[in-house]
Image (cartoon, rainbow, N blue to C red; front, side, top):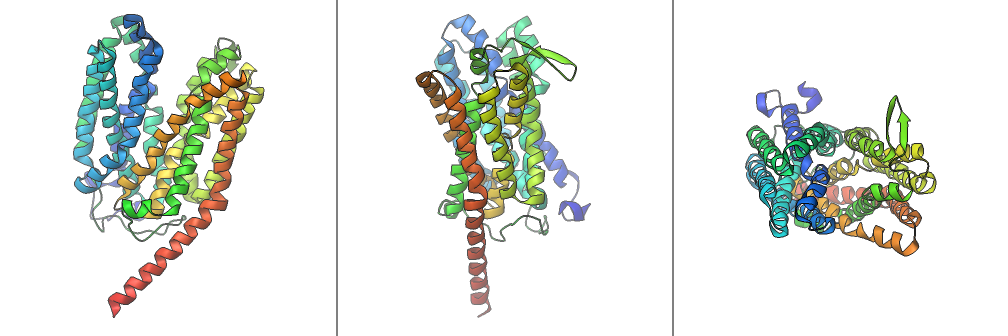
Length: 434
């Protein structure tokens, strides 16, 4: 077992890497509803207070921005003080956020709740992904993917119970009860989390290129590889979000949202079918492509995944007016998009080491927030052109650019970065010998 996991045989119990991975996944499942369950509350809140859905959705934007752009700060605390205390505080914040939402009688209170939830969710997300990257050096893509899958698919376990509670007892009770329940689980699990100490994880030869030096966040920000990764993350993130975040209005404009679709013995309205597939494939893709990248390399996997995404988005805009094809192609789009949350953090740690992995991956994760700022342009473009065709085309081109950048820009830059690191290491060793 020690040989396959890369962990010292002297360590066991809670410090087993698989225990740490499972603990991180549980925490991610507990915060998934903050993002993916939010849509269930929008209409009930509007029905009670009549604030308008646009004003209510500002809370979601606040959540995404605070969840992503504060992760580097939270990551620094993790790398400095360890994962336990950061996740514990994150659990308190996400619980407080939904309790506050349950009592919010003004938009200001709702926005404050969103900010608290974003800070807490970001602390938990960044910590759990960073911890997985540290414990599994030879399976970094798979570990990051499994952890991110907890966030991508975790809400599937509680969507129906939340819907039933909202319908039967009101959205306030759902916010309060699930907020407390999710927070309690995160807080309890936080006490099991720990980062590996020096020498606890063996250096094992992996199939992918990995650095032997730990780069500080400041050093990473001065590296061109980081900014290429950041640009690619924004392109794929924004391109996928432009197509997927507008899926409901697109289906309505295509006049197929309520058309029944029968596949694999299941019959559902086209939009409902597509959204159901989203939850499943958005989780599966993260460990799948993470594992693939551990086998054939990050850049090769990016070329394949982002290329599939480009083709899928383009075809969805071209022939997606057919209800069955709309469901199938939306599944392709979701499957080829969610892997960014395993490929980019694992590549970042491959390049810049594990000591500051949580902070460094957190800095790269802010690209998700940057990408979200571009999503409204999809609506503007659709309004200006009178159709969604140009939106799909732009999104497809963005993904195609990122796909081609992987082998033709990122790979040579990473090779140069590795060679430069090796030269500096050799120089330092020679100086020490003198």
